[in-house]
Length: 183
Image 1: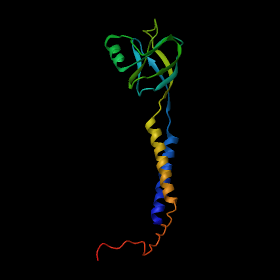
Image 2 (image 1 turned 180 degrees about the vertical axis):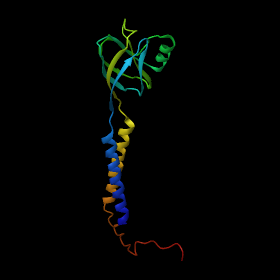
Image 3 (image 1 turned 45 degrees about the vertical axis):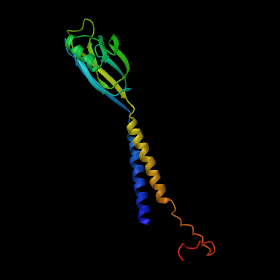
Image 4 (image 1 turned 90 degrees about the horizontal axis):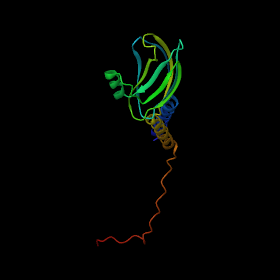
């Protein structure tokens, strides 16, 4: 019986450690920084596979101070953009040498962060520095960490819980016992 209790306590401690690590290491924000060239007569795209309610915040700067156009396109909009050069998008900023963006996705999709030349700049190479942060809450990671903590606590409780002896059954008085049905 004692080895079973030690096993419950050991399993409970392991579950507490795993659950605590899951919650501790969970990081909903991921930051990226990149510098790239928008080549003459071209555009530059960054693919981002996003869940719903994922927020992207960031800043960009064209190093020579020339204007660039920035937009976020869904996968369908980007396919139309490639086929017919349409600029339908879910988010855009006016042409500028620097800009701050803040976009939140509404449905899971492959979104494209697209940089294009500013007006009159299509024949030049433009260098852009882009810093961005993706923030997305992962409910599964949070709930699994909490579940592991709860199960670990229950296991430890069962391991330390006193077993206690059973209460002695009261002795029956021979006068209280009914007679058997046979003679």
